[in-house]
Length: 148
Image 1 (cartoon, rainbow, N blue to C red):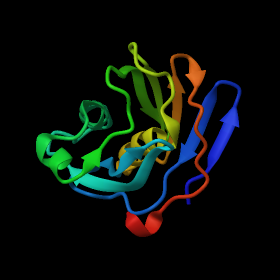
Image 2: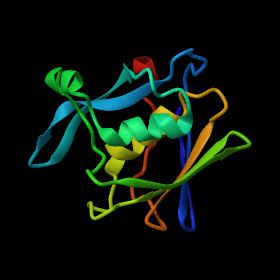
Image 3: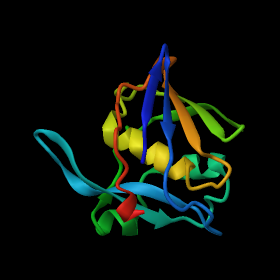
């Protein structure tokens, strides 16, 4: 189960599920945008270049490929989002993202995409996510582990 712990300016998210894969996956949204916001479920996709947490996060920020978009997958991460820092130590990935002119809120889906993607790596059990030096504003209380 994924849990969220809010402390001062960080959010710590705990991963769940099977993570010892030869080829880690990225998590995109299989859904649609409505007047109420993004609706859908998270869907795993394989990207050959996503062999390290840094590369996986870079691939995730690129968004879906043409083929993935044609299949109905999209991203909740705003265009222009940049990785300021990414460090993994003691099972925790500490990520600082910069909005880069984008809307400064990842929402639940965007936060989940980052957390699920990074916890695909066996040595990452938790993610501390900071957005433009502020805590990401989303809260996640459950993991759809059945879909992982």
